[in-house]
Image (cartoon, one colour):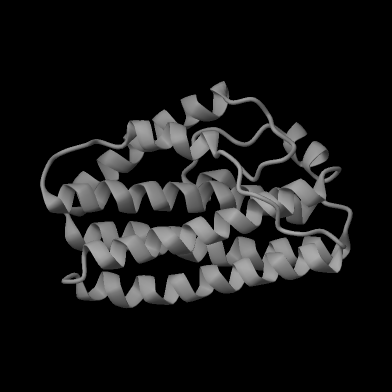
Length: 197
């Protein structure tokens, strides 16, 4: 799952996986909350747009899968003698929220939210790929391979849904703009060993 397949403009700093693999407890805790937030975000979209039949059906499946990922990450924590701990501030997502356009029609707001979710899934997928390839723990390596494949599917789901509810060319144009802005955010953020993003 190369970066260009995901559309990301800037790859993760290669130092990230080396320092992250030395800080597995913190990475797993942060990852658990990422899965919880992903499920919550899909629930919020379902509740906000209940009239969008395809969105409701597809995201209901994503909610179930994200929550099962949360349970699986929790299992990995417990197996290693760790516990969940408290959620952390997600600087990456906080910065992304600032590039999302406010206002506009109900459908325009939906597209912004779907593209934001697609982007977070794409970046998570890229990070999971790095963990799969670079982490010395064989069990966790296999675990992150499985999650990488799932996240790639979710990323495509969000983009496909956006193109159902708005002209595909407009969605592509906005997607490219968001990807460019995300690369600037990635460049500006400190390389953290205790965060998925």
